[in-house]
Amino acid sequence: MENVKRYDAMDYRRLKDSEAALWLAGIEVMGVKRFDSVEDASVFFARELDYVKSKAYDKQYPELSALRYLPISSEVSEGATTATWYGYEVTGLAEIINNYADDLPRADVKGEATTVNIKSIGVSYGYNAEEMRASVHAGKNLDARKATAARRSHDLKVNQIAFIGSDKDKMVGIFSEAAGIPEYALSEVAVDSAKKTEFKYKTADQILADLNGMQAYIDELTNSIERPDTLALPSHIYMDLSTRRIPDTEITVLKFLKDNSPYIKNFESWNELGAGATMFNPTGKNVAFLYTKDPEKFTLELPMPFKQYPIQIKNLETVVPCESRCAGLMIYYPFSMLLAKGI
Image (cartoon, rainbow, N blue to C red; front, side):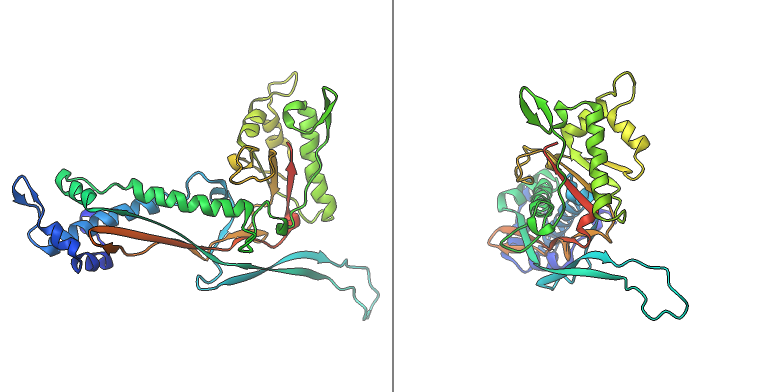
């Protein structure tokens, strides 16, 4: 439906029952009253607010890597205060047996429970009397940028939790110790009598050896059970590998990987993995994140996605409260992923 026909009934009732509606109804434009009644004024601004709220919902996931790339789940009830998940390890091996054997080897799954808190994330935006008056006089919509700014602020916080978690709230992120994600030790090269692990000091062959080593490490840890299919790199390193050619060829390192890697099928550019992205990366190093893009392996748990409540009115100001519920990452198979720090 078009904005001119749509509005939130709760917003309308709160406006109609407030002093703000009486004031709005009395506004004149060029000596003529803009609204015939309190009801007309209330409908007008309820429609304006509906338009603004819709704009905030349109930008569901800005360019924030966790919200864009990671599996997201809302399976946990939004009313829950804690959630428990299990990190699993498959055990047991089948054997050749004799007829009527009664001592069959046992296959099982060992699970270690982790309980996390579910916390509310809140933000708000609003409009004062001057802004509402300007909207009437100019015949323009209320500034929707306030709503999108509130949504951006909210999503930044969720994105941060996905990376660093929150120790005090017992929420897990990629870089949390409680995540249990294994780390891979990168090879070193000599640079001016110092040992360096960064890709910028390495040849194409040395970089490929590191990336192959990361996959081999997971393969060894899990007896070939886990085969991660996605490699996330800091944005500037992704750009470097996209343009750096293998010597004596026209093929870049990244293209070679895409064409020849047996298991990695997705290559992603994450700004948050860079050494300078201190809001998300506490290591002070450039980090590669190898993982399996599968909600059976792990999820970013949002029991209640971003929600905008009906307006609250205080004097001549309208405020829209916003909330979500977040439990951070729930990592069921930590060996389905790997971190390599110092690339």
